[in-house]
Image (cartoon, rainbow, N blue to C red; front, side, top):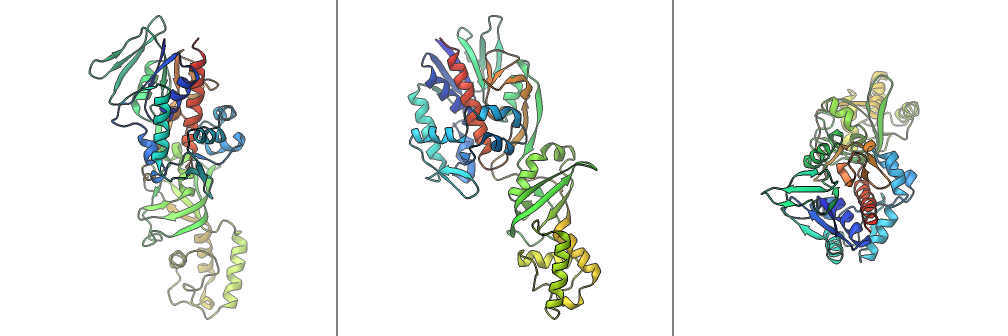
Length: 413
């Protein structure tokens, strides 16, 4: 009997193991998890609800959620995409629901629902699951077989280990194993993080949010990155989907600048700056005796409006009739092109995502097999693939692990 060793008992590891074992019962499948529990990231995902995938069924559109891996995933998603994952879970007795932003969760709102389904499927497929199994090295002998050495001197012998599936997430061990087997590793960097900003305009506004804003950073004189979406003011700076998306697309640039870059915020992206100026002038004429800080001509939270007017040099008791041209210019600037200094990064809840990993050029994305080391396969975040928030990172894990499991199983006769 041929043997597949899956290194990593997370989302990608389990799904790949189940896919391989179900497709070919002649294959012995063993999952080695270094920790005490399986599927730990699944458990905490989505605040404990598990954001399984995203309600986007067009591969062309789906790949746009991936700052790294777009080209490679397009073909992969034509083989296994969110619709397929939904169908797989339904067959396991798990129903999903779609929220207004496209994120999909189990109807139970409990990640344990997903974990129980995976554990049951693994048991039914006779996958052997071992926790506390710390892999120290993986070597390949001259016959093409692998040997897996475990902490404590335990060894899985090379007599019939024909396949290795590395599904170690962003853990450095997986990158170390891949490098030892001939792979180039793109240096990992954090992705999906919030911005630390210490600015008087944001002080005392924690919890204030706007449903739509544009945040942008300049990469050089000609190129900038911008993202649109809800924006949340926090105790430490800025968060929300717009910031998280920008942190993902700008992960490498922000790392190169040590997370200290100017950030431009447009609090009113649906209003042209010149139109805004005219609207404020009209409002000034219509409400000359009203106080500027208490009556806003734009739809933004009251406390934010008061903070931005103060930043424009407008006093608390100043009437609209007394608004100067200079104050008008500064106010328009604050509303549409406010400059803030990013002074560091925070984390996005417990969901830590990295860019970087095994170079995609060295992987066959039809099978997820290494181009450098036959018999070695990859799945999930060990690869240089990452998505924005919304279930996309799990979907790339499901897709790559399913393709890898299928390919391995079909090689066994």
